[in-house]
Structure formats: structure tokens, C-alpha cells
Length: 214
Image (tube, rainbow, N blue to C red; front, side, top):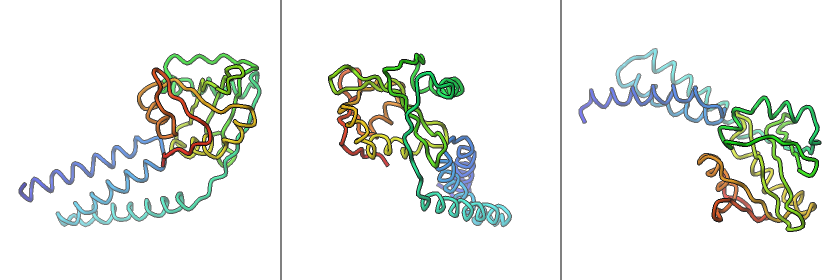
């Protein structure tokens, strides 16, 4: 590859990454992709002696590094909050996020039931996710009807808190095994990261086993 073609490819790849970063709903993912794109763009600017391009993107790299450092150093506070099936907030939450929910679990229909567990996952006291469980009698199994995390919090922190750090919460309610439908491939991938294993048409997880997601 000659130098001119290499520089063109570098510029296009850098531009594509910067543009792609702005479409990320996860702030962490946005910062990481933007950091890579800005680094490549700064390199591109240096190689073609476009100093304003190099300086601007070099500054963006420093800004991304600063905020990523802040994010990685921050110790998030998580809390599990059980709410009633007839909660107006629960209805409003599901209604507000219905399109996002449908994108992960097509066909999901919200049907409040007093026998279900409705759990809000708070992250720094802000509702970050909602889990709805249906206990299956005295079998020790509960079906995950909904496991939804709002955009901006999809870095697996909520899932690790729920399934790893709160295994005792489930055991106190005689829930030792979770079953979930796979949903779309992206949701199935999330389940696998959270320690679920495919069994036929569903995913299952024995509680107490730590997931490998990062």
C-alpha cells in the first residue's frame, strides 16, 4: 500500500470511528470509540501536517482519557428496590421504554401480577434497570420475564450486581435457578455474559455462580 492510499484509509477509518462513537447509547462505549477515532485522526493530522486537525483531535483524546479515568475510578452505588405490581411508576417506566424493551424482547407484554417479583435496580439512586420474575411454584425456579437496562447503563454493571452480588436475595426467596427466553441475539449474548447457559430453547443460570462478563 503506497503512502497516499494509506493516509486516505487512515483518515476515513478515523472519521468513521468518530462518527460511530456519537451514535453509541452507552456513555462508556462512546468515550472508548471516540478515543480510538480521535487518536487515529490526530495521527492522520500529524502525518499530513494538518496541525489544526492534529491539535483538535489531540485535545479530544485528552478529554476522553480524563472522563474515562473518572468513570473507571468512580465507585457506583447499587440498590435493589422491590415495587408493587400496581405501582404507577412501574407502569410508567415500562410504557416509556416500551420501544427499547421490544427491541430486546420482541413480543413482551406487560401483565402486572401480584405473584411476580418486580425489581428496580438503582445505580447511584437512579433507576437503571427493571427485572420482572415469575416464580414457578415450589421448584426453586423463577422465569425472567423481563431484564431490561436503560441506554447509558449497559456496561454489564447492573447485571453483575443483580445476578452475582445479590444471589442471597434470590436464595432467601427459595429461588435457586433462573430461566430466560433468549430474545434477540444481542440479548442472548448478554445472558451468556451474565453466566446463563443455553438449554434447548431457553437460557438457564444456577444462582451463586459468578458470571464472566466484564
